Length: 157
Image 1 (cartoon, helix red, strand yellow):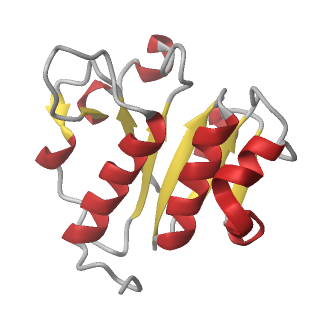
Image 2 (cartoon, one colour; image 1 turned 45 degrees about the horizontal axis):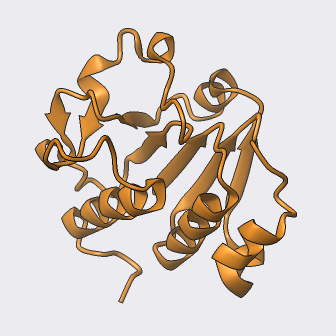
């Protein structure tokens, strides 16, 4: 069915542009949950997405509730540095599932109240304690390529 990256209230246009390029390269849908910290017309978004930006499959949502309603059968994973399981602990191999990887805003992450009752779906990436987090666009690429690897890279040469 599909892979999806969700950016909850993104703040940095260059990150969104870079993630958009990764989405296009991997046949992944990019979901943007408002409010955005920038305009999608900004030069920084277009520059990071290069000349591919117009081809990215982008779906905008007014809220997470709207996203959940539209994709009620989706499986949602939340990428946070306080997750208790690693992204490598999960099986994403079923290509018939709608998998959503949710990333929070760069400055604050995903609000804890949004994650109540979803703790088992909070994932983290392996890293030492010298840094608080990785760059958002790098993190999104790591996660989406792991899901694609488990699925045998369908549609990606």
